[in-house]
Length: 360
Image (cartoon, rainbow, N blue to C red):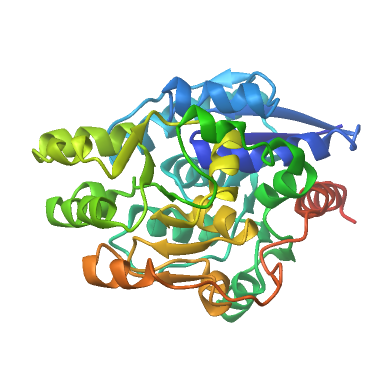
């Protein structure tokens, strides 16, 4: 009997892990356990997603909490190493590019445990971005690479990494393909006093925006001046930054509709029924692409280059003039090419894990 431990810690990882954990149930010869680092511990960013995506209760809670990247790395390394030393699993599976991902990858390497990376091969080519460092660390240490796009596969092949590379697609899209009825209901629009196609869905939480007063104020100005009302689920990190930078007056602007962070399915309904999307979130970029919504990227780059290449979005960064220009842009009528996945990523990933462990 082989054993595989999945490590999650933040909202994007819960969503990616949910369909893969479900797909792993088909492999009865593999014991699966779930470790939650506690990087996201707020109910609306953690427990809510476990409930609505039917993710099993974690076998281990590390309770590492917030803090600097160094503090999170040290805490995860210390607590995770104790579990791995005791249980000695055959493989650790990590997702995406958070501090939980990077720290767990380093821990697996130090403990000589095989490592699989879901969402490998993506790059933003800026080492000032914390997520980029975690991408680099994890891909340098992995044994099994699950790439969401052909671009990611090509990058890893050019990098001459050692390990098995599999083009899987993105598992988050599996949830969307399989559960369309959950976001087709427009009753949620009444909850937030919205009209279909007459609002913009927006998010902002990346550190290079929330740690920079000028960038954050520019983004809030974009929201305030947008041609349609902007629905803005406010991330705790962003809320704290707005208060610290004395920008709270924007939260009272009539064009910015602030709501608490919401669950996955409500998010999908709101994206599916909006006009356009403003975001610095890689996950929301993918989701907007799936729903056929034009996305204005409030970051200076994106690893999801397929979205830009297919003219489904534009990278503006926190640039008021550029964002204002592309808020008027009309999306292409060309059909989606589904270059981010076709709804079978979880099956490909779970089979890839099984085959690797069994030497197939």
